[in-house]
Amino acid sequence: MNSLSNNALIEHNLTFILSEMKAQPEVAQHYPPNGLTYDEHLSQIHEFIADAGEYGLAYEYVVGALESIPFRLTGAAAVKLLEIGLLMGFKSEHEIDKRFDRRP
Image 1: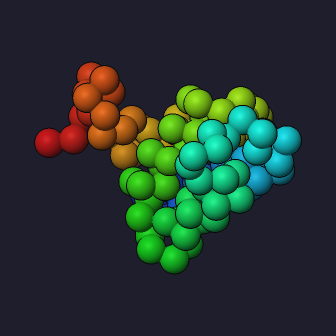
Image 2 (image 1 turned 135 degrees about the vertical axis):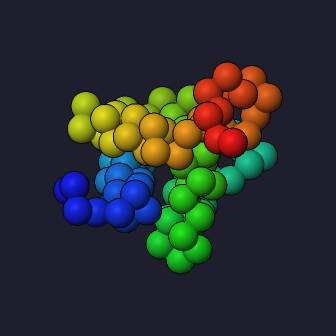
């Protein structure tokens, strides 16, 4: 995989993680009734990745979902998420996550 560009690696890793999230429809019951549904949320993440190339937004939505919904990731997916975070240089745009922001 060393020959992949950063963007290609990020896209591949996000797609891998999203596929694991899509395989867990049982977590749909944990989505709040006044927000996006499980299907809408994962579809939106897919659109950010595949259609818009908005990897930063997709990453933030994945991290937010993992923090608030009881998804389970394999070790491989966890490592891929870590790789994305290292390449992106941030966790989220939230004030509480500023300490993780390495962007100029």
